[in-house]
Image (cartoon, rainbow, N blue to C red; front, side, top):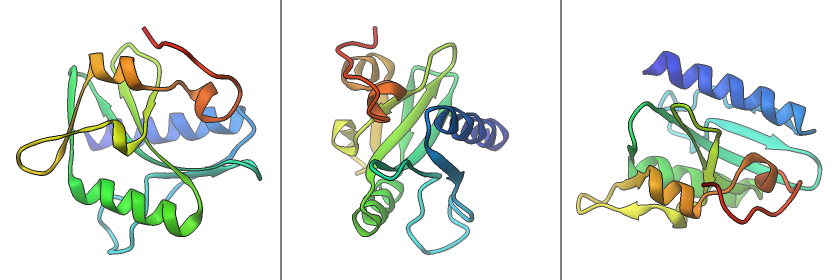
Length: 136
């Protein structure tokens, strides 16, 4: 899964560059440091994004609360918009704000594909290129 996650991060960085954003994978994200780093940092001089990236072949994904907390802390310090970027197999990227996720009884987060499609945004909306109404 790490290989797919890394590939997903690289693919998303490429897409962000194509949208006019300088973007990079954050070094040492994923636990190699105690600093609150997201997987991707991007900006175009007006909009700044901090993105925690998840890829999955399933229709449900779980995210540790520590990852969401770190994303929020980094975004607050950096002045970025925090997003979880999710790539479900055979789907385009879907972006959600941390508040769109459901808290599990174990205090982690869960996201189902149908909720992601209902609440999510596409890359154009996240990068300010247009307002989207539905992903379905």
